[in-house]
Amino acid sequence: MEGMQTGKAEFKTMGPLAFGPEGILFVADSKSAAITAIATGDTAPARGDGTVKIEKINQQIAALLGTTADRILIDDMVVNPLSRNVYLAVSRGRGPEATPVLIRANRDGRLETVSLDNVNFSRAQLPDAPVDGVIGEGRRQSNPRLESITDIALVHDKLVIAGLSNEEFASTLRTAVFPFRTVPDGTTVEIYHGAHGQFETRSPVRTFVPINVGDEPSLLAAYICTPLVQFPIKDLTPGAKIRGKTLAELGNRNRPLDMVVYQKDGKDYLLLANSSRGVMKISTDELTKVEGILERVEGGGTKGLPYETVANWTGVDQLDLLDPRHALVMRRDEAGSLNLESLPLP
Image (cartoon, rainbow, N blue to C red; front, side, top):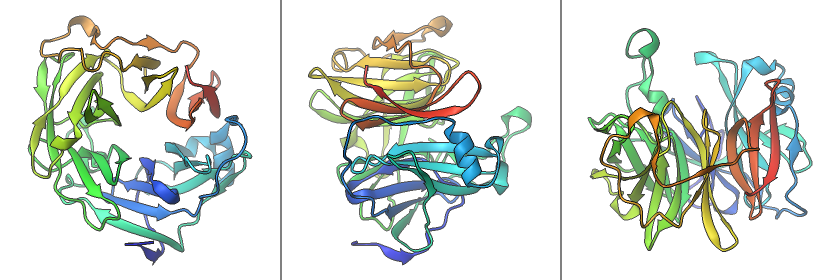
């Protein structure tokens, strides 16, 4: 494939994940501050209905890797839109010594490791990644390099990469044309965070989706604590500094986990999975009507776009579209096990 080499694709960390055309899987390596595109060869069209259920998938993956469930982390999940096989970025072990592994869950429920020893791939390095090292003290210790890439998505022929840079305005959106060899300088972004009552430039986007807001191709991006912000894609130019439009404050003390956009009965909706506020269903009807939030939202309240909580979708950690009628979720049950299952879109 154009722009790709054949050999071993190596990673220090793995995830987020995103699919492109022809079975191309984009894999972020935050520790290396790099994006790798892998030709999976997984291009056979899916057959059958949208039913998937793999119970205790964390325990099954651990057994496959010769370890225990408490020694793995599932960092991301993505559905191949062609085959509907599911790809999982897994860390075997915890902390700096963890080993990244790519796992495929096939439609028949069979799990297998994906060998990366002899694949067609291309790799692009971020030009302005934050320092790799621990900063801060005590509970405030962090390694900003691990947030160099927080989410990715292919928008037409451009891979959009959210994360942190080494700029003063650290929150950054980068775009790279695929096939790629380099990633241009990013666009640094500012938002008004209603729950905090201030403009912010250092907190990264946690999850985003491409969507048209009226006639404006845009990104809708969710941040911790939980502003939902619009960025016009035309504004994402290298070296620019832009301010997003805060369309909603969806509640504090919350971390957005995953987001998808889907169509049902002729209307578009967002589904946003959260750490402490369940799965939110948000109609896109009001996107062009809601005013931007520029004042503090008191007491952990909500403002802007309305939403409803999908009551029976509990414990969701990961979320993707399986087909036009079903979502695929990874969710934790009352015993703490992770189950992979398809659910009808609400």
